[in-house]
Length: 415
Image (cartoon, rainbow, N blue to C red):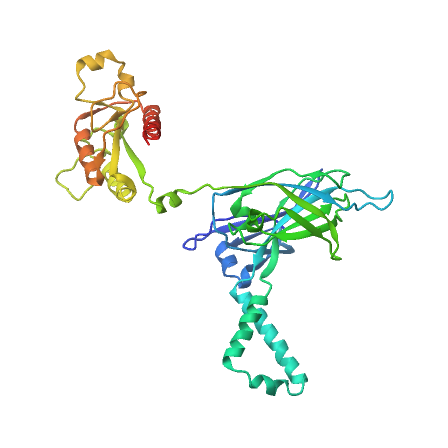
């Protein structure tokens, strides 16, 4: 079994290609392949999809695909296990080569629960037919008692459908006590589907070259239980015997909020726009110029106006005070005096400048940038700049990136 995480977009068609290989040390052979739509897998009953593996138009087997929905999160988990196990050696025979196999549960959905309840109901009905007086007694139950029985049955249903393998440690050669496994670092989404109460099953095996790995024991826990202090876990064998203990030596969940998390909690963005005034855009009086100003067609926007209006309209809701910092690069502002032009190399002047104020003589100086109010303010300052800037070049992004970085550093120092 192999676990993959795929983003699902219901409005589009997403094809998936699966290939199954026989991988040997000396040679690898393709067993078969299957090409399916992700939407077909999502619509499959119980989210289990079976397809044929085909190679050179010959049926080579079947592939079973199980799908499960997870809540995506950037939070990461760091966990480190130690263990003491009961030896699997018999006198002088055998070895202890322990490793851990960690799995997370796939829970039953409403359809699975309903099917199981229906099966139990049918079994109970069959039992009632074979036991005299049972049907008559059940008929006397009130509706409230029947509802209570159903609720009790639902609560007692084992919601774990099956298990998904998520991680396997390297085995430790010929040792069963004082085991120190490597730390496990992975996203919380992969570890427990971002559900801290989801059952996690930890299996301890002894590695065998034959592939018949021997089970020491297993334990079921959850991220929530470990957070609450359950750091010593008993490994129970198939015969219900304690075959060792697993110790949580280190456990940490690194909270990594996403951009949406910040916005939901009221954080604001420092939004900036940079206008390209290089000559490759074409002179503003040409029809094909990306900076063309067509005053006769007020409803027509050039590409820069359209980008400012549409993107700025979205970002304005999240921008701090609804303001933008407007930069220009690749051109020469016409308000620059001859003294300024001769004082510095022209290639440096065209790197970056603030469209609202005068050219900053030193891009390395930290300071508060001048801003404009909203999308209409950004459009207004663009219109003023495009008619007062000589298109030049070349295209350098280093000045823009440096100004962005300086703006962030200044904000960190003043907050």
